[in-house]
Image 1 (cartoon, one colour):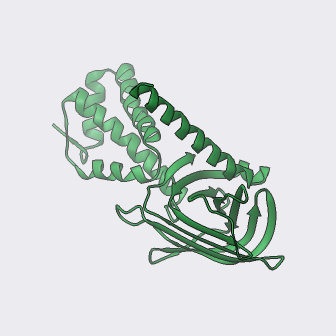
Image 2: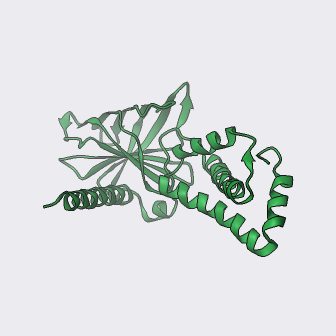
Length: 254
């Protein structure tokens, strides 16, 4: 098997693994919750999962699902059970630590009422370090313990990339507008011979990389580029270039 064939196989295996993880995240959510799903992200690390004192063989993977109604769900695939899901209302964040009050546990697709808490040390700055510890007592008296530690970056499986404790969807929308605007200005710079007068705009657009996937960023950027192209076609090159300089003097200069 040639090198290209090996790389192609690796990509296929990786894609199948991601689809499987996304499926597990959805399987532990009722139909109405699936419709309410906002995003699913995943990371890998070292994991320990015990239920009633028995080691369930955590596979070292966690998926984090965020719902439009504010609820949160962590899924931990295991050897002795397909997945254990830990659910609760919106994360409470303070000083780099997020707390999830547990109200339900999913054992495969079986929903069990529970009480407990997850403590999540959030990724900060350029670090990808995530630490999760969940302790819960199920309605039938069994105790659940999950400990997870990762140094690996989170990846988006569904929707925009959102890690535990990341900004709200409102900030995501702001990033969409910012990246699209930056795409428009980039086209104006190249087509009209302008220069950026505010270099911080590029830095702000780059910060949005933590909110979504690279593919989505490129798609949004292309929307900004096409906005300039469409205006140039409709209004003429000279007019759109003149208007861009007039409308955005803080961003563009000759």
